[in-house]
Length: 574
Ligand SMILES: [Zn+2]
Image 1 (spheres, rainbow, N blue to C red):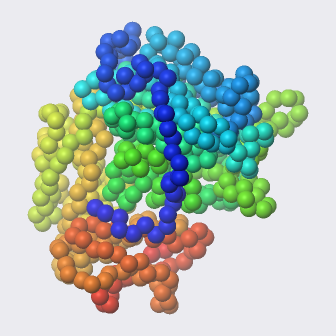
Image 2 (cartoon, rainbow, N blue to C red; image 1 turned 90 degrees about the horizontal axis):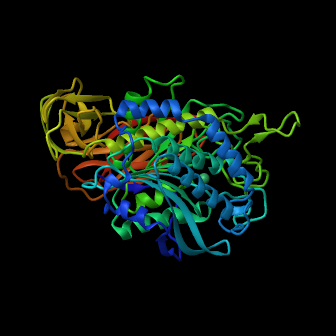
Image 3 (cartoon, rainbow, N blue to C red; image 1 turned 135 degrees about the vertical axis):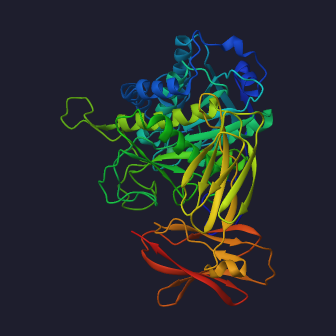
């Protein structure tokens, strides 16, 4: 499948200069990530690796009070700008990164020294400082045959209005003290368990100036031949209060509170592997964690890779061909556009604090970061990373369709007790996830339409692998005019949409044409936008960006060589 039209450029990563002299300061940690080590040297005194034990442990042991303490400490450094003080023991990024390193050391000491803390040091001029350090910790896996690692990351740095203001109060409590506290807490809780794959807990530097720390880590793993199974990025994951200007698609109205929803952003069309990773995270939440929790969470799969005009540390990994996604709160306190005169929200200002002392007794009593919400997000992350790190290998598969039956044949590295087949039609998420007891099976679909299938293996403990890429198949109907022409304009997804939607054209057989386009029209037939598209056999997707707050009903038509093939309706809300 291909995305032939990206209507807007989300974030440009091109920089005139790049990170050099990238080194890990802990060579044992490096050897483990490469896969050249003896797992027995890092074994736990008690082997705890059953998925139910891990899910239970995450639900019970991720502690809102621990997160609170980490956030108080991160705020105490006052400014974590990448160009801030590296010498002081109490203020600036130097003190902050040494504290994170020390936390990883303390955690390691409590768990048989299994966790290996390290810096990833690199040279690049950022805000006048030439050398920088990400902090990370490596929890060695049991299996060195497939030594790809799972990364849980955040960015440690913070900022004020001035990109290189190293003096201001930049506590960055939500952006991104919240994500960093989450990563540290998961390192603590997950260190008592054993995983087949190595897990890396990573806090990056230089995010605010251009995702530099994350890019250095992506360069590093590529250079060292370290395989990465998946990256879960956590950035702004603790706030629950909606600001005036939150980056779309986000919350409204101002002052709204949402502590039961988290947004999952990832790159590509709905059949991209990154969105497959997001579906896996949602499935593992539903099947492993949801039965245990007191407060159920809504995991919202987002259309775009990030909020409009924004970016995060998952992007450099994705650009290096690595599966990656981002967690962000449902509600954000601002859009970080501090250049906007009259900007009064909290992001990227001295106002991104942990909370307020409303009764002036010297203690915070009204909080902007909700520690219980942050703990719920941590458990969701930890659960997904854990299942990816203990689960089996992803299979490949083939299918044949006859009538309304799809026969699926799965090819895996070994025989498994079960297999799963995710079937998706009109929405982001699977309509159903079928369980097969052998590698070949059939699915009967009740309605005509296009379906997207992907498959996973299931081990003896009931843990799924990450799912394979999707294969589309079409159940035809004589009443479908598009099908007769061998081309279908599928329903836009999402529809209704908030501001962007994906328009899909399914080409059933190779075709000759000169020019094809998607015309977006208002209900009076006035042309709003024309997207030139390239049509190849199979699924072709075009992302249409409509704009924030531009609500209404619109038509979109597939036009080939001047003739309208098919027209459909789409609605934009709020
Ligand atoms: Zn951030």
